[in-house]
Length: 467
Image (cartoon, rainbow, N blue to C red; front, top):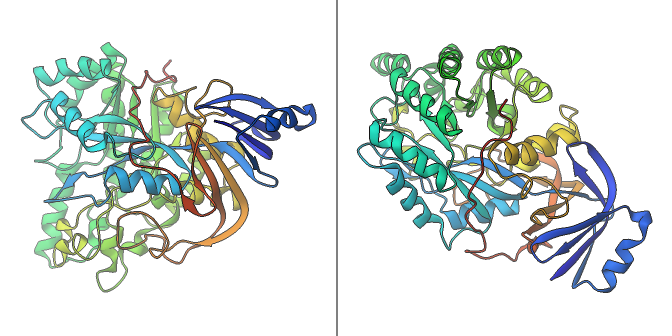
């Protein structure tokens, strides 16, 4: 089917310009200036015409950090690939990159096969995978080659969670050396897990069991220390490094210093670190458990520094780390012991809207909104120019966005399979009006028109930012 989107304001990394867009099948066929008159010709032969007068037309969002159906602490994150990608679509995200998890003692390829089984035939939008390495050995290192051949060329490691995902500096070094050889990217959860575990033991022994102590036992200095250590190991090996879910100004300083020397170091942050704070972790009556994630929410003064990092590009991407656990049956597993609260905050549906609040508040420009939410993720993880841009030949993943609409975020209206909203009652400006995924309208008029299985697996190329 052919679709024409006319009279809209086309957004790209360079800003905003009036433009009309022709979609033919799954691809963008042409983009034209309104005064060219081409839209009249296109509309005469189109199956659908979308009037985007007064609306933004932007490339679909790309969330490169989600955890659908992820096992954690004896339970699983609440969203399946069907519910999670449907919620993503409602929020203007048309591509996710999720994490396949290698349990200790198993192979990377078996983990990848398991995650393909979770997603195939169920996803409502397109998806790719990163690989979590939890067991570094000769066989695992060899399998990294096969993963790259299968379109999975980014590997996440953990300096936290001893006994589960934790990797020693030596193991990280070996994986980085391999990544350097094959052109892959190491993604790092940078917190000093050994020191944190000691602080947790001490807090519980002293009777400090409430959710807020999840934050106080994971101080920003231990995120900064691990970030600096990961950067040092990457420098020694020559491997590119991507710091996930950076939350603290001290860790940002370490990233900025490395980037200033020309090192291939990149970092993302998440909406929760831009809009929520340690005060939310301290909510009474165990409500703070809703806000337990790692790294934890920080004191509010960190937010200004993170916004600044987005403006300077020391923070290159905003992802969600979407890892939802229901408050009633899952978060309450940690009542009386904060260390047993499943870690994660739901957010895949709200990322695009929340970042638009950054535009409304003057924190970032329209071009930067598109850059950190769509174009840079596509380039960082080998999806550009198929994704992340509205240009001839690109996939027709397109969002028509009303920048003046008002909405209130709430569990009563969201589509994620979780029983609370981390942003309950937050009034925001802007709303997704229409979403196309590979040329198919999946959201319009406040209704979902997509289907499970529409989304396909994306085999990704290498990072396009490596020097």
